[in-house]
Length: 195
Image (tube, rainbow, N blue to C red):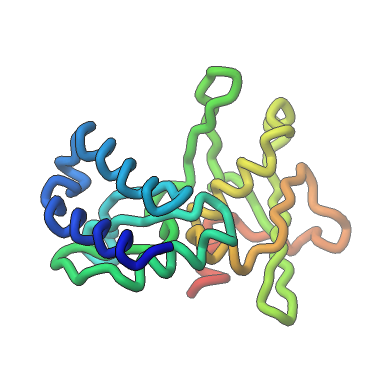
């Protein structure tokens, strides 16, 4: 990736930053930002407000591709300092209620991860496997389990952490014998791993 392309991107962001504010961004600037980011590579993006940092944020996401994470980090290394903004090289952990929708067969299906439990396996190289116990009512959505588990875990831990440190996310209806009695509420996952 050309350093010149990255510089041009950040110059554009700096000039247009007021129009990228999450509270005022319109379709014209959504499309323009989308085009500018696509010129850098196969990235997606997210704009929002980070309550913890009390700043607006722009995340340039490698879209779950570990190979693109280094590229998005390179882009962020050249980001300018803009007051009231923070820039991320992947989607940050969400500040949410663990509820999300997935479009399945043209229907919005809601999932509530606050109803889940998990057991965490940590390995010597600081990589994790997570076994997540979900309600039996999820049976019609089994073919989407990888996506459901990824969305919730990425929401809690952030995209970069999941790409670099989460080996496997396994959704089950019951824990196995070894896991019985060890399950914790999914709402504690972030605290256990990140804090």
